[in-house]
Each structure stands twice: as structure tokens, then as C-alpha cells.
Length: 321
Ligand SMILES: Cc1ncc(COP(=O)(O)O)c(C=O)c1O
Image (cartoon, rainbow, N blue to C red; front, side):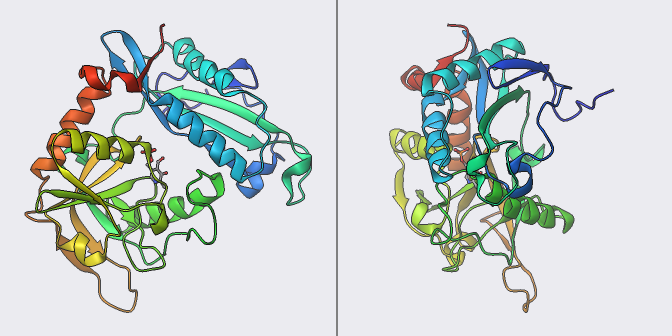
């Protein structure tokens, strides 16, 4: 029996214009992307609303998808509208009320030289039900580990693109953090400032002012990050976009991760393992519990993605339209 354990409710996926049973695997093992990470992807969520499932900020995700594809010189074989429709159809086809949606463009089977130009670009879209990315601890707060590995720098690769190959670093460091007993990793950048998590952006709060960094600090500027910056302003909080130093992080009143998968997850403890020649040091963020502003933003975010706040309904694409 094909193992579906980690893909609850996934019945069919979309590949090159057709639906396939989840257990079918039509991609050839000599596909270019499997060997060299020559793929780009998106992570998108649909939420259950009173009007059926709604996809959160779909146009922004598709725009970033095309931007990522251009970084790999991909000629995308589908239009923006075709991808939008295909994504909606996957949620419908699987009867999902809420979903994590994963479109992937990849260089497929052609030739295995390093240059992908002899391999066609193909699109696959899967969707399944995926709860809290960091599990039960998401609400109470997580303990993060600053890894000694520095984030790939924006002078080395375009970090504004979601390139499959870059996620090797995320996978290695996320695994390392968990094997040491932490909930998630945090990367410093080559400048020595806080960059991001393996799949999350980072915010801190100091004296009721929210601060996050930007692409000049070698991060992927998340769509959730942009959402939080906007709702924070609407809720009357001051926001600043500046580098976050390690000291800022350790002395913050509050800190949290943001991302489509993780949503908003308070960070309550930080272990600094960034210098392997020194002993690891633990820092509690304020009192070591989720902060009020973090929880206020998380409540607002959780409501707006579910269509409970009228002014933000413009960010929802209803699937059953
Ligand atoms: C490396 C990285 N940073 C940040 C994010 C957060 O981005 P978003 O809020 O668009 O999901 C993600 C997730 O896509 C990511 O993979």
C-alpha cells in the first residue's frame, strides 16, 4: 500500500495538465531537478471559510513563482491564469476544505549534463491537509538554535527566489537543530546578523515596535511577512525594516517566526550555537513566553485568512467561485 501518512486527504495531484492518483509516479528518475535541485516552488495555504475554501494571497504567490522560474531561466509552459486555475482545481478535486498547496516547476527528463537547456520544464501541483508546521509548540512558543552555518548570501544566489537547490541548506540545518533537541534553526547571514529560519522569516518586538529585516540581509521576503507588516500598521503598531543583530534578538521583548507553513510562531528561547569554538549560550526572550503583540497579530492573522475580517477579504481567492 502506498504510504500517505504525511499527506492527509491527498487523493490526486495535477501534473502537466492531467490529474494522477496520488500513488502514481510518472516522473523519470533521470529528471534533471532530482539530481541538481533545478526546480522552483511555492508553498500556499487555503483556509476554510464560511464561503468554502479560500486561497490566501494567490496572485502574490504566482507572481513569486514566475520570478523564481526566471532566476533559473525557465520557460514556463503555462500562463499565470492557467496556473491559477490549476491550483484551484487541485483543491476542488481533492475535496479539501483547508489545504497546503505545493506547485513545483522543474527541469524534467532530457539530458543529465549540468546545463538544463535540453530538459523540458514541467509543472506539478499537489495539495493536502497540513496542520501547524512546528507542531503543538507553535502556540506556546519554540526554542530555536542559531546554527554555525551562515545563510547563502544574496551575492551568491538570488535569495528572493524559491529555488529547490537552496533548500538543501534548509534541510540540513533544520535536521541538525532538531537532532540537538531544538524546535527549529535560525541562520545568521555573512554579515553576522539574524537572517531567517530554514523556511520562515523573523520578527522581533522591542518597546512595542516591530522590526524585521529585508532582502539586503539575504532572506526570502515572505508573503506572510508583508501581510504582518500591513496588519501591524493597521492595528497601530510602529514597524521598522532594519537589520536584526544578534544583540537585538537576545534583548527583544518578543520574537516570532512568520511564514505560510509556520503562520505565526512565537520564539521564546534562543540557543546561540553560531560560534563552534565557544560554548552554546541560551537566551530567553523576555519572560520565555509568547508575547502580547505576537499573540494579537497571530489572532488577527488567523481570523483574516479565514475570511472573518472584511477589510482583508481582498487577499482571498475563493475556490468554489
Ligand atoms: C526561506 C524562507 N523564508 C521565508 C519564508 C516565508 O515566506 P512566505 O511567508 O511567503 O511563506 C519561506 C517560506 O516560503 C521560506 O522558505
